[in-house]
Length: 110
View 1 (cartoon, one colour):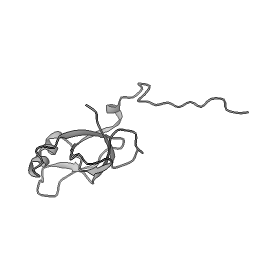
View 2 (tube, rainbow, N blue to C red):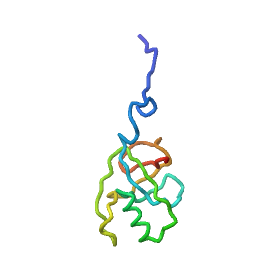
View 3 (cartoon, rainbow, N blue to C red):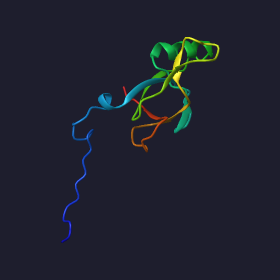
View 4 (tube, one colour):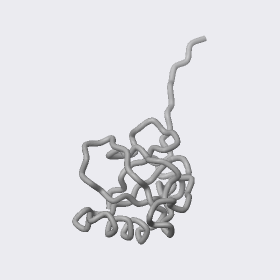
């Protein structure tokens, strides 16, 4: 016997899963580097804003990112003790078409 058909299913393409239901959300202070690039990911937009102001990057936008694996959050140990950040740098990709894995995320198109 020979297989006659090959069927592939994309939960996002077929409308079975919404990206926000599956992927974890974080925020980056975008420096405009070529992608993929490693960046700090913050738990909230307010944490990213605090970090941006303290580093003199007021002109840099704060963009949401989504990851297929949950971020592991921790309190910052640097000069900003109140900021919640991912436990290590995260590789940021331009869209969700990248090899899924920990410490990888993509920009969210708003």
